[in-house]
Length: 192
Image (tube, rainbow, N blue to C red; front, side, top):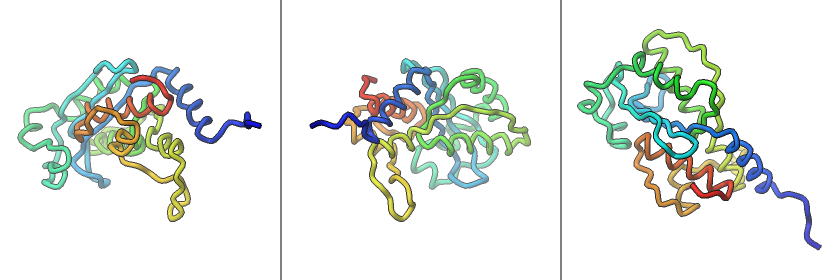
């Protein structure tokens, strides 16, 4: 006899399909680093249908460290004539305000937006509605991490590889936002 009880994976798939029905936008950032003093240097937003809504380099208030450059290949030369975060933010906000926002490790991207605000002493008053694709993918995979007491986390490129997604993980915001979208659709068993 086949059980009709949904598995945990089935429940994750159903949840992801509900989230996709909300037509999220996909966001990714590249930053000066990972610490509490770091800020955004590139941000991209992809619409629910895969079209590019916004993608810009951002001039940081501090130099980009060489270690960060090695990862995303965004150099100080590339951002020197870019607009600063206070100029970029209203454009970003116009694309995400009132929308469901999907990001891979969403807490990081939200923290970087808040930190970029703080670098310019701008108050953060936003209540954004994020979907964490990293968490959903980790639950979908269902590999328990005993040391963390939760599901194992996977890098974005590992998630893309698991689904045989042809999009490259270039560690640039537009490519990573597209890959995040493809991973979320793949979890749901839908084309991207």
